Amino acid sequence: GTTEEKLAYRKAVNKSHAQVRSDANATVKYNAFDPQLQLWVAACLYWGFMDTYCKMRPKLDAATLAEFYRLAEPLGTTLQVRPGMWPKDPDAFNAYWEQGLQKLHVDDKVRAFLTKLVDLRFLHPLTSKLFGPFNRFVTIGFLPQRVRDEMHFTWSARQQYRFERFLAVVSLINGVLPRVVRQFPFHLVIWDYRRRL
Image (cartoon, rainbow, N blue to C red; front, side):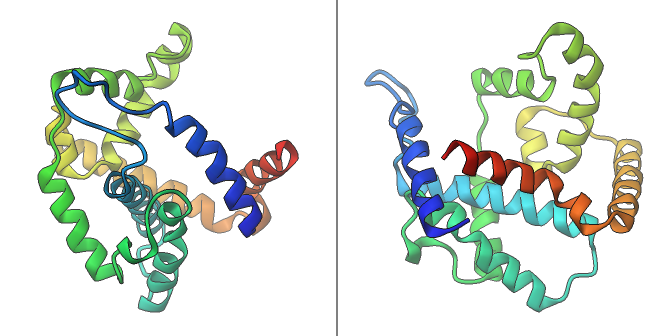
């Protein structure tokens, strides 16, 4: 989007984030305006995009990866991440990512909440029953092993094989679709945003 659109998006997100903070009695302190925490959120978004992109197109050259990384910086800097905080290159990002994963801890309360999201239990029971198992399979398939461990999700070699086959089929279909069709969901979202803006 344009600079103006990013600023409007930041204003709307900040309005929501103003409500996201721990209270005085919380064991874990959290404030959505904390630049270090926002850096981790932006890193998770980037990692998810990059991981999916690499799984769909495994043979990416260094220049494409570097450009993809450069374009990801506004995921954080549009919000509270200051420009100098974003790791300087993909290697620095990988080091930051691995350090972050090692610090990760998911307690029982958060695990229960996230598991409901994974199983789509926040939706109508019929929708959850129909689509929850597939969402669980795909979600766990994309998670780093460290996150699976913290979430107490099991993942077998057979499941990994099925997940890789699924990605191969999706990648094949994605590769033959015209670009306008592949990009339609993204264009729809940005059109809707601009319409509401």
